[in-house]
Length: 328
Image (cartoon, rainbow, N blue to C red; front, side, top):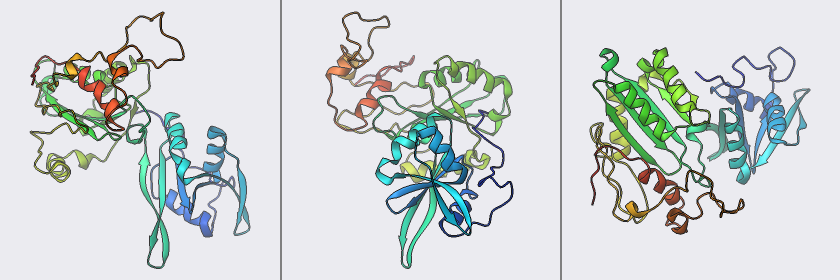
């Protein structure tokens, strides 16, 4: 698995001994112990605050001003960012390899309470400003030796685009790796069998590493991969959809692609087939360095788009060809 910045127990306040913090710092420390994360951002009114070593870390990584807060006779490092400005700071931390827990403030009958609502990782980062999909992938492997069925699922949390498929028979693992390479996920959740297959994980790392980026491998609760629980989750999320028919959800005015079943292709709308989605592989001497990377392509000419996610969803629908193609 990919290493996180620091997996050892943290000396929160530099004493080397547990500190009986009180007030807001004590609440922060208590919440941090509830979750497996490298950094905690806790909302306090109009700001998200960091304390102790977390404050020192974000101060260094994000160039934030670090101050001091007194509590129980001790002084603790403190840093913060406005609530409306949290997103870019989260993105910067995640891109540096940190898992960031976010504790929001909620109004209750007798005041307010804070609880951890999410842990942000490369595959769960909401980024509506980015042009490229950031896929969270999972890979599960069944019984049956080298030809065992391999299940794959890919999710872009920003657009809600979700796709799943399964490959089996000879060279199943090789074809599964090819699918992973095409989607280039930023984070992979290997299933119980896959995570114990060192050879498969190494081949997957090598395949994804060919993109030049870094993919995080995260161990998730093994019970979440149980077939019964997975089918229940799919029905809750998609209504009538089941593990045998998982639809690819899209938005906008252009019709959605057909469902993926095994090696069945996503169909492409007739208008989409005419789009030139990528610029030339070699440099274009007529293009200025200040122009967008896709200037000169039909994709660029189709802006503005119908919705925030539309431009992000167009490219994978047109640049992921498969052997079986249906058209409308």
